[in-house]
Length: 399
Ligand code: 6GU
Image (cartoon, rainbow, N blue to C red; front, side, top):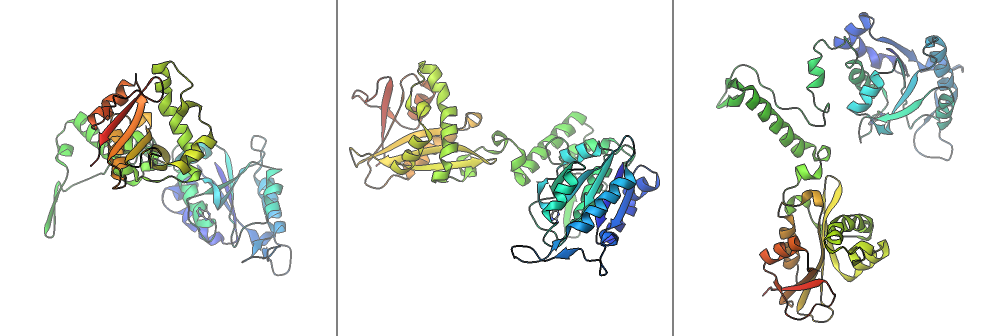
């Protein structure tokens, strides 16, 4: 693989001569060329920056040296089979640099990196480059570095080590954090029992058992637990969430309406199927109906893995101020069976004002599952006939 790096600090890239990447360069697996942007500036002072049009802080890198440098890189490196590199521009505003992206880039024959400094590179440089080669702005994460050089060191290492022959043990490339969406399990070596001053620290016994199936199962458990603890965003909500308290319920705001509507449809489709009725209100409501509901009721929402997965609402009955009316109790179908619905009911009851003596709700009269949950929560069928055909009304004494 050929890699070109354009920078005003070529010395920053010196570590690419060390360790595994250094050896890969000497072995000819990696052909890295570092270029000093200033040598492409034509003025007497080798200027590469100027103040921004429209005002604002800092300096902007000027287009002329960049265009000349990128043209020179292409002219120097092009071959019949490699007409141009894939240009990567490190910056906090880019697409996330992930293991998956590293793997895709490791399959390309020629990469070029353009290291910006100051407040960025004149936007027309991107247009100049895009007319000649594929261009991708990439970010290491949600924080700001002073320039792209350190990011290039990280990216070249992540990409380079995936090239055949760069890392000796190919297996160590597979058994790694992020290769299959989970973090790595903890590792231990001798001594089996370490006298650490006042403490005695032993290796988990399963690792000394010789039982390879048990070791694999333990390691998998450790990976799941670590991922849930440190990177819950990598796991599906169903693997992270077991209780309502993990969801951090909060009062809904108007911006939640869209996601509430999605959850509502997901939760009531099974009801529609049971009742062979697709005109039940939660299925036909529009986004405006949901928004109106947010003003008429107090609605709570809970999130897991970046998704809205739980919601419920309540109000003082407009007909009887002693009645606390619950409704739209929803738990995402993939979180069913964890008792979250039961916890949600208890939470909504706990929000009742002291003036409410009973809680009230209704559900479809064929909704066995709901009826079972509500019965367990202490709700009983009212003897009066229900307001809506096909529904039952349920109450519970609160105080
Ligand atoms: Cl790739 N470059 C710069 N300059 N800052 C960053 C970054 C990259 N990723 C996060 N912050």
